[in-house]
Amino acid sequence: MGRIIMPSFAFRSALSEDAGSRSGFALTEADMLAHLPKGHHLREGLEGDVAIRVGSDDYADTVGDLLHALGAIDQPRMPTLGIRVMQLLGRDWREFATLDEMMEIEAVGSHYLRLRNTNDADQAEVLADLKSMVAGKPGVWDALREAMTYHLAFSPYFTRSLTHADPIALDALFASEKLPAEPGCYFDQRFINYLASQPERLKDIHWRQFEGLTAEWFQRAGYSVELGPGRNDGSIDVRLWNADAAPGTPPAVIVQCKRQTRKVERVVVKALYADILEERADTGLVVTTSDISPGAASDMSARAYPITTANRAQVKAWIEAMRKPEAGVIAGAFD
Image (cartoon, rainbow, N blue to C red; front, side):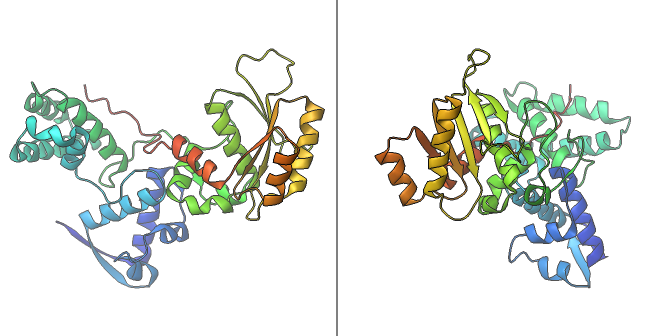
């Protein structure tokens, strides 16, 4: 195992770049340190002004820890290629190969990826050898190809392979009103993955991002969605129609989004009920990063308001359902 000695500032810069480029975030060194797991053995050195000695595998594992904290991958550390293949095959992998055979497949596969990464002319010959090693083993080539795709995308040993056009600042989730510009997309998938990994930060996101998150959930659920302008929207943040609704039909649901830590007050549900009547909507929905207050819940029940709520726990369930680790990975063309 090779070991590298570098000043801490150089390691901080390298880790920020490697974890950022592979997660799609424009990651500052402060972001990197904030997401390094507490008690990580490199933290003290990275926070100081010292020379750090790190093994190459240890460095790769640290990148993996950061990617996991950022929601880009679904497990910490950086699995070897062989472990990736075994995980994809599951417990049945021993039906196809002995441990020695799997180690040989891993060695040849890793060699091929190094040649591929440098566009070496010998890569085609090594790929042919790799295919012959797994020939006649059902499912193994598919698992190996998928494992190599992820390895190219996330291992710092290789040039990244992601489709994100532009990195996005992690801080934008908490400080920016800007939502994705592409039609039919209201919230960035990278932020969804991040919040799935860091659910306690949901309460801190920008109110406009929270509106976008809500619109994104219902768009994926099959509704026709109209997201309000964010300001001067008449207190209606999102309008929803069933997919088969005729043009000009009143909305099926009007949504009020409340990104706040205090519980939603009764004045909010009363105002939403007035909006339901004005819009001739079927129902109303309060989506909140907190919960509904007892007084508001009592009013909704006693007055039979056609209003439902989605509280913090429900929103977290939405996020988990929309989570897509490895989003943006370019499928490997190994044929």
